[in-house]
Amino acid sequence: MPSPARVRRRSSASSLPIRQIRVMTPMEPAGVPGRFRDTLTEARKQRLIAETDNGRPGTTADVAALVTFLASPSAGHVTGQVLHVNGGAYLGR
Image (spheres, rainbow, N blue to C red):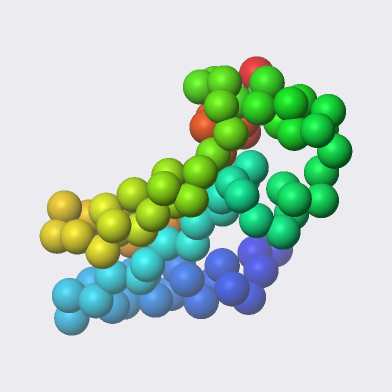
């Protein structure tokens, strides 16, 4: 069963574009600087980096670039999605 947040997002994403309102997509950044990454041991940080396709840790600039895109007219047809900012770590390698 979908979570209440997912149900609200889908409902909003399907009803609001008619009024040219997009539902900004939640982002799931992984491995970017912050409280979570700061608590990890150096060995765990290196394992997380090894899980990415680009072989580097994420940065706040990576997240900011996505936010900038989503706020731009270029993302006018993007709505109701969850975007993972994780260097490809969730691709099931």
